[in-house]
Image (tube, rainbow, N blue to C red; front, side, top):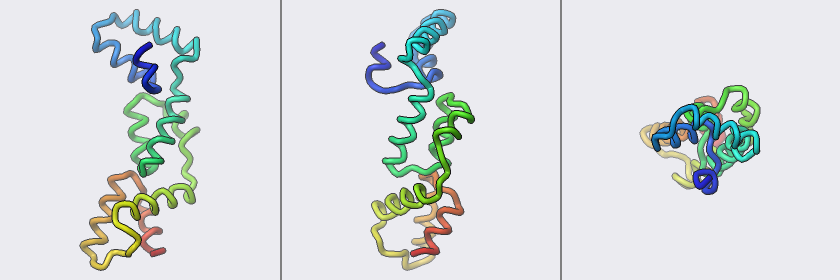
Length: 136
C-alpha cells in the first residue's frame, strides 16, 4: 500500500517491485488482483496520469508511447489515451523548443541540427519537427 500511496503504478511496475522484495509470484499476483478489484490499482488511471505528467514536462508522443510500453501498458490502452492530435503536440513542441533555445530561429545549420536532435530525443516525430522549423 505504501508503494501506491506515493504515485500511481502500472501493474507490471508494482509486480516488479514486489518480486524484487522476494515475495512469492503467486502471492504477488493475488495481491495485485485484489488491488485491481478494489480499484486501488489501475493501468488506465496510471496511463492517464503518466501521459499528462510527461506532456507537461515537454516530452513528445513517440517517447511517451515507448515509456508506457516499458511499463507494461497495452497498445490498446495507449492508443485510447495518447492521441496524436497535431495541434496539441505542435504546441508542446513549441514550448519545449522555446524553453530550451528561446524564440530566435537557428542561425546556422549546425545549430538547427542540434535543435532537431534535441527535439527527436524528447520524442517528437520527424514530421512535427519539420513542420515546426518551416513555420519559424
